[in-house]
Length: 237
Image (cartoon, rainbow, N blue to C red; front, top):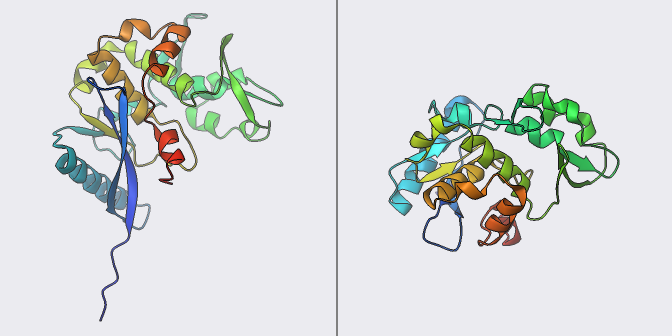
């Protein structure tokens, strides 16, 4: 009697880099596929993923950013909770709200009213799906293009975290970051990647170059790209 092989799945891991041509190294890790959406199944996935990562790379500290993390540090680092202070009005907005409210489409946007609704509502606003193709971003008059695809989101996240220094010491203890809720087939932007970028920039003493959008763009595009866009191009998904 032949045994049915255990199904496998691939999950990305994001690792900050200091002495290389990339700020972040994105790699794929193979683990057993746990069927179901229950918290218990997600915990199994996280535990298996981190066990493989620690063994493969020799890491001691890996942080999961999803709500099923079990690590209290993940909560303030989520894109729904981490806030950036806008210089224009002095108000604070979550990274998620700022990102969704800045999208410009062929037939509309930016929808700045999304700055002040719950983050989950901002993500599901019907206008984001019914306004044609996205053409860029407009954050309080600050214009961003689409390339590289993660640049604007990374800028928001990195600057938001820079503005929250009480989180820095703990964050810098981690060698890799994951987010099992992130689906590379549906979205290219991932806070775990942006967090890894922040750690790399901090350790390289480059955080003084992240506030100005032009300087940030020149900085990050000067390094090799290693995010999920790169993995998609290589046919991982």
